[in-house]
Length: 368
Image (cartoon, rainbow, N blue to C red):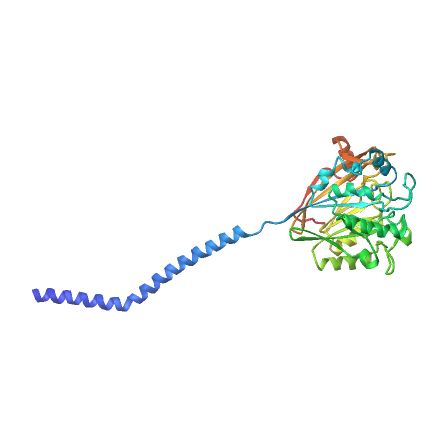
């Protein structure tokens, strides 16, 4: 009996020994695989969470665009009477300077020679009146308009220098044709915005145009527009085009405005900003592009009608390179020079003339 017990113990031990050597590697591999899978799963989950945590937020950029700015004639007179170079901008300078990029159309060249301009249709702004633009935070101005050449080439060149010295960029004019048609770039937190500007030749002397040999402005030409936008698109997806065009004192764009704006959109512009009619005009969504045919007056002395005393500030909000929202802020001009925020009743009338039924438009993607 004792021998049988010893034999049974020996047999069991032998079987256990054989089993261990036969299956230990398999058990070890399976256990190792299990541990590795758990570790990989945890590592993958951690990496995913880390990726979500470090994924950069989209860059928000606010572009504030305003209409015609004229610092000559009665505007200049009011400035001198008040001995206040920033008088026209006092009520809205904070709103203007808070934007990431502030844009407008400068309707009068700066020049330090010749008599003061107090009347008439030939403009010249005194150099010191640039203080209002500076304190209001204007980053870029269009010079492509029918008054930029009022004091000849000398004032054009002086204006280029004066703006540069005061940290304000410009578009639509330059020392020659190439510079007048070149895009001007502004960067905000790594996002680049390209600006171009053009004037209509139908209301502007041909002598104001830039050539290869002389300074001047850029005239509207759809074929040249396509080339200019293509050049800008090599460096950024956000192209903003300003056009000085349209029939004065009417809220409807003419066919030339429409054709030029549509071409800009088709060529890749994100936004078209219009000036010149001295009143607000309708807006339009076209493809992936938004068109404001006229922003109306901003700083001007046309007090002879309610419509010429009105305009809008367009607060355009981008996320990275995509236009996401536009807020229209109506303004009213007082005392031949100074815009203020419009009252509710005034705002409704201004927006109505723009065919807008609300002040803010949001879109994930603009469609036809």
